[in-house]
Image (cartoon, rainbow, N blue to C red; front, top):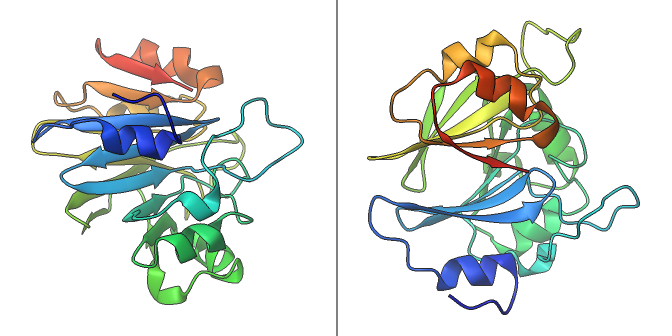
Length: 208
């Protein structure tokens, strides 16, 4: 595997066998996922920002040939409105999958309405050859809306299920929602990962 180029270049240079999943970290809670011939960005936070400690290494305009952009909630380090239009231009076929209540926020950022899909816990979509489901997540403990603005996203493949929980606080709702034997890699936001790991059976965890 090459160590040159962007995280996207390096992941594309990686041979991902059939039924396997490739992941590359973008900084913060952001990841690139490759599976089944499709490429998805999860919580891509690519724009320069005064509060960030790690630059992503991927510029929005270089995010080409992306099939899906998955965002778990509306905060700038999860839905990067400044970068979204450039990602959409670089990948004209990409669909943006977000919690249903923030669909308008994504279109207001300049993404065409027919390229934005809302998702809520318990719902599953088959897009670009990937099965994407939403599970409950809770970023602010007091913020328990009837229509959630925070979700975790789970890619469910033929052999693997990979949950990415955004910036979830780690209550029991998530543990029950993802209680599946096939979950063997969890993508967790570091400051809440211990709470989640305490509720899950042994699994490999990738903590951002």
